[in-house]
Each structure stands twice: as C-alpha cells, then as structure tokens.
Length: 411
Length: 104
Ligand SMILES: Cc1cc2nc3c(=O)[nH]c(=O)nc-3n(C[C@H](O)[C@H](O)[C@H](O)COP(=O)(O)OP(=O)(O)OC[C@H]3O[C@@H](n4cnc5c(N)ncnc54)[C@H](O)[C@@H]3O)c2cc1C
Image (cartoon, rainbow over all chains, first blue to last red; front, side):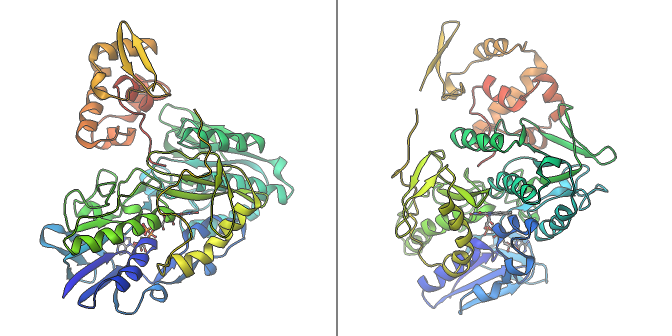
C-alpha cells in the first residue's frame, strides 16, 4: 500500500483527490485532511456585501465533493514532521505518508496590523470581505450607510485574488448609484502599489476605469496602523486617510502549522520549484494552490491550471519517468466592473495581462481587459462550473498553458 | 531592452529603468544613481541596500519592505525616512535589482 496524504480540502485539495483517485491504482490509499466540513466558494464573498449572493449559497459540505475511495479526516493540522514523513493532527493522531500534497491555502491576517482586528471599530466601521463572517457583516454595514467617506484599502501583496479589491470598489460604486446616494459617498481606493494593479498595462486600463467612475486613488500608501479614536489610516511615511467606513484587505500569510513546521518563508508560503511545484526542501512534498510561493496570482484559476500540470508529472514520477510538464504560472480571471459588465485578464509568469480577445471554444471570443456583458455572464456562470466541473476534476475548454492567440502585444 | 549610460558605465535596464543584470551593478554606480534621485549614500543608506543584495542573491526575489523588517531587522519607518516616498522601489533601483512586486 502506498500512502498519499492531501492537506486541505479546498479548491486544489478537492480537485487533486478527485483526479488522483481516478488515476492511481487501488493499492494507493488517499487521505484528505481539513478542519471542518464547510467548503466555501470564495469568489462568492465578493457578492455577499451587495446582497447578490448569500452565506447559505456559497457554502456546501466538503464531503459532497470528495470521491468514494478517499478517506476524509476532519480535524486541524498541527505540524508536518517532514524528516519523519509524518503529520501530527489536532485530535492527537499522527498520519504517516509516502507522498504529501499540501493545499492549505492562504489566510487573511487582520491581527497583524495594529488597530485592525484588535481595534474597537473592527466589524463596526472596519470590515473585510475575504471571510464569510466579514462579507456577511459588511452587508449589514453597507445597507445602513447613508453617506460619507468610504475607503477600499489594500494592505500589502500577496493576497488571494489580487483583482478582488478593484472589483469591490467598482461594485460598491455601482451599488450606491443604484441606491441613488452615490453623490453622498466619497469613494477612495487606497493601495500600496504605484497604480491600480501591479502589471503596467492592466494597471493603466483599470486605473482609467476608476477615474471614469470618479473613484479617487491614493497610491504608494503602506499602512502602518489604524487610529481607531480618530478614524484614520496612518501610513509608514506619516500620511493619513480619514474614513467613515473602511473596507480593508488585510495582510495574508500561509497557515500557522506551516510556520510551526518550519516549512514556509517569512510569510508562511512554502518555497517550491515554480515549474514543477515540488518543495525545494523535500522531494516527496508538492504544494498546490495558494500555499506555495510561486510568483503568480493566488487564485482558484491558477490552482486549477497548476493541478492539471502537476497530475501527469506525478504519475510519471511514481513510475520512474521524468516529469513531462512545466507550469507557466497561467492565471485567468474575470474582473467585475459593475453595471452588469466584467473584464477578463489572462497572463502568466512571463507575459502581463494584455488587451485583445480570449478564444474560448464554444462560447466565442471574450474581450480581454475591456468591459463586456459576456465577461460578466462568464463570471456568474463560474459558480456552477466550480461545483460541477472544476472540483470533480473534469476538463474545462480552457487551455492549461497560456496562449498568445488573440492577444495584442504592445511595445 | 534599453541600455543606460551613467558616467561612462553602461548597463541594461527594463522599461521602468530597473537593472536586468544584477552583475552589471557596482557600489560606485549605485552612488551615482542615488544622486540622481537626491540621495547622498552613507552607512545608514548602505545597510538596507546590502541586505537587499545579499537576501536576493540567496532567495531570488527582491525583498519587500515587510521582509526587510521581519528578516533584515530594519524599521520600516526608518526606511521611509532614508528613502522618502517609495522606499522599496528606490532601494531596489539603487541596488540594481528588479522592482519588488508582491505577486499578482
Ligand atoms: C473574496 C475572494 C474572491 C475570489 N475570487 C476569485 C476569482 O474570481 N477567481 C479565482 O480564480 N479565484 C478567486 N479567489 C481565490 C480562490 O478562492 C483561492 O485562490 C482558492 O480557493 C485557493 O485554493 P487552495 O486550495 O489553495 O486554498 P483554499 O481553497 O483556501 O483551501 C485551503 C483549505 O485548507 C484548509 N486548512 C488550512 N489550514 C488548515 C489546518 N491547519 N488544518 C486543517 N485544514 C486546514 C482550509 O480549511 C481550506 O479548506 C477569491 C478569493 C476570495 C477570498
């Protein structure tokens, strides 16, 4: 019996369990560990504040998406003892493994910024929408907001889904417009980056969109602390931004057990070879999804492409053959822009998001970096695709590696 | 890729002016670059630059401000005083390293 252990039954872990159960022979045992049985569709968190999705709708039981023939262990992970090929669990058990696949994601850490989670305004005037609780409470706060200074603020990179803060600011603008109090709400997007996004062409295009909607931008703002008494953000260089309502995207790190196991970098992300996703420290550990340190977006789409690249490599490896695939960092995401439209970004390690069209079999070309209704419908459709196609590990009509077809190259 | 020339020394840079080859860098060049953005290099200024070069040589990416704090032991506010406005960018530029970006 060969033992495969998967840590985390989120986006990447669930896909891995499904695909590998089909691909691996019966003498392989597959065990998946997660602390609870609530699988959230995290992109849905973006819509809960506006009442266009609900907490009930985004969460389903993890076990519903795990295949037969896989053991699900529901408890917290305490420590990986990689030198011994064992994992200690919070319920006192120890699981030995031959191969370890880590898919425990990234976690927002409002506790790391003074005055954020420990401040008296937390979940009163200061909210996140990166957790189910945060997005649900923010819904109530938005409903009662009658006007004033609203800040949507990004603390630092990396974060999950780097476009979500921009989507939020565009959607919140649209929300107040629909409520007919847009003129009473002063909206500012506060970012530590030097523009709306980190990659130049997308930053320019998305920056225009903010200007067109009269959303102010404050750039190069590195948050030091939140002054709760005066209701202001204070940056390291002493600048201040007052607010009546603050929507913050907190710092992110890897999971606590990763720190405790000595597996992560200073932010708790696990160093891997960016082409094979194999741990640089241990040959029998691979890291899929947000938990690794690869230089691309922390996004479900990336987890998906990475898993597709990884599986044939793994099958070759256990067969004693060289790994055939090399991951290119492919990321592909819809950016909701309000008014029933969305943009599409497609990029990888080497190529930044460009304008043009994205050729998608069966649906037709989708506009890259430009707004369209079709993109918006694509984003909405993704929820069903996630549950029905992606998690069970079925093929999507999207190329795993990025393609330059349809893209406009600029000088 | 554009080539930059400063005081008779040439080096390759990307469209944003950051070095593309860390080996084309030298302390003299860094001192001249710093002057262009109004910074007079002294020991206080050199310490974070040296850390950045050593850390990225070992680990790859240009360290972020947060890493400068947690791993290098620098005070972020102090870095803002030494390199006003955009310390991470300015230091990376002077250190001959790629612009530090948290990944997209
Ligand atoms: C607001 C928001 C919007 C987003 N929008 C998009 C989008 O439009 N498109 C897109 O592609 N991506 C989007 N994402 C990102 C996407 O959800 C994540 O990138 C994706 O879920 C990562 O998958 P993962 O498997 O790495 O981690 P996760 O899906 O987060 O799974 C990690 C799992 O590990 C478990 N775990 C962690 N630590 C422990 C422990 N110690 N013990 C036991 N279990 C543990 C957790 O319970 C969890 O189930 C969004 C995310 C957010 C927050």
